[in-house]
Amino acid sequence: MSDKTMKLTGQGVDVDLPILSGTVGPDVIDIRKLYAQSGMFTYDPGFTSTASCDSSITYIDGDLGELQYRGYPIEQLAEHSDFMEVCYLLLKGELPNKEEKAKFINDVTYHTMLHEQINHFFNGFRRDAHPMSIMCGVVGALASFYHDSLDISDEHQRLVASYRLIAKMPTIAAMAYKYSVGQPFVYPDNNLSYSANFLKMMFSVPCEEYKVNPVLEKAMDLIFMLHADHEQNASTSTVRLAGSSGANPFACIASGIACLWGPAHGGANEACLKMLQEIGSVDRIQEYIGKAKDKEDPFRLMGFGHRVYKNFDPRAKVMRETAHKVLAELGVQDPLLDVAMELEKIALEDPYFVEKRLYPNVDFYSGIILKAMGFPTEMFTVLFAVSRTVGWVSQWNEMIADPIQKIGRPRQLFLGETQRDFVKIEDR
Image 1 (cartoon, rainbow, N blue to C red):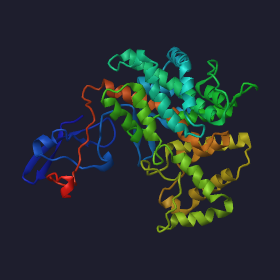
Image 2 (image 1 turned 180 degrees about the vertical axis):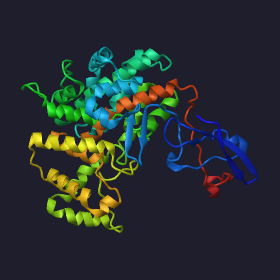
Image 3 (image 1 turned 90 degrees about the vertical axis):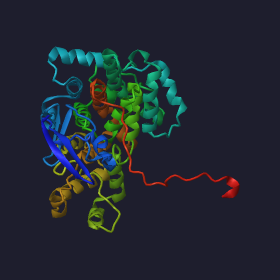
Image 4 (image 1 turned 30 degrees about the horizontal axis):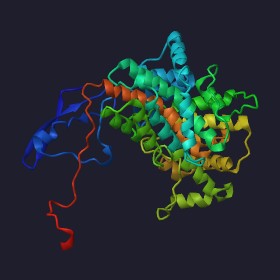
């Protein structure tokens, strides 16, 4: 924080606004008293120039292409850590020692099973229901089963709810998939890691032994880690806004899932695969590159560039290497993956893409990996929700504990009709 101010003058108003400084990143202008002193609000559609909270969880520098969890660069965490350790870091603020990590993993692992009655929920959905609609319904319904972790004023209950959500999301996600293909649900295996357990619940069947491929397990762990949190994005802001009303944690996370479902947010890697399907074959890539360069053509290359990162997406650097490892391990023969690899090569070399910094982003590579591993396209956003749950609950916990946080109440610039007198229907 600092004691600097900015003077706002005009329209007969002279206001001094405090300037607040974080530990890193741009300063912010504190406008909390602006309306009281000037009679005016600010106007910021999408809140893209507004800090809605202070936070110590995730820091992004889009110009430099940096992403840090609690101060640790994502590249270092990807190389040296794993998803459960990152979960602990995001929730508690520090990396765990061996004993703390072991206890955390144990505590989360023994919450992976669902109440048996929740299994019946799935029968209420059509088999072809989008799994994100199932996730919204089932996660919201958890509040009906776990009454001992609904009191948001109790720190212990908040922690239990956080553990439950992190633990149960993979189980719910896998059950949504199994239901869609008509296979029996596979219960969690407490002997496996978080990522290995998820893969087993997704792809094993009772009539055959399933062995988790360590290369795929590592890839799954990295995908979870790289998507764990991303500052005040749309879904995280939705979770915070829902939480500001005092809603229970399961309802708040369900609201985040609903927001993530949007194609402009969590549906990006699904949209990327649909684009590859539209291109269809390597010999049509140049045609679509031309369409992408044509400002009059509505076609847009999905999976390239990023709204926040004006340089290379730091997560994409990690995912690129992992994508090539997975493809090499599986030896998958798929025309769409051939299209993706050729498209990547062109985008990294073509002056048009390089000058505009339209580098492949994390959604491009994660989509390739997930398709190669056998995940159906409609499950991509579900996996994003599983990953992001720890970020949501970390941000939610931080918000609940923040003494200055208030219920969210954005203002508006009203452009409708002014007061009109009612006219009876027979006189209209």
